[in-house]
Length: 160
Image (cartoon, rainbow, N blue to C red; front, side):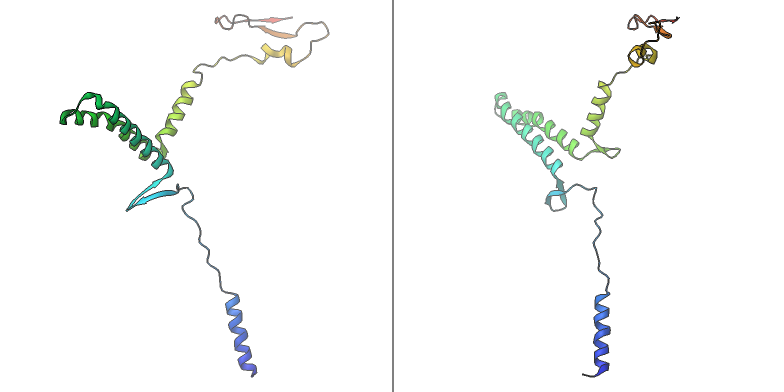
């Protein structure tokens, strides 16, 4: 083996060792996983579940409204009554306002409605007897008389 040939092999081996590896960086981390794809329509698990629930409710209403009678006008009426649950589910599944789906806005609205609208400010001196021990005379040095706070009568300041 000639030294020239041996040197070429060493250079080729070094080039193979130092080749950079390519890594695929995920760019769709905030996107939901697609569980069903039909042509160009891709549905996430949330959308598929909402559409199935809406179609199930609409189909149940359609079946129960058979008591209206048979005939073309009654079939159209049954269809009109059974279509709104599916359309509502379709709206909830796809519509977003300010980057949030409608069920998220519903949770925000419910939490807002359940919070108190008026807050009552109470001085820390009101509960001071729980926070600090009594002084030597057995009386508080400075305390507010806050009786009847719920009735809206403001207390008077009493200094011992």
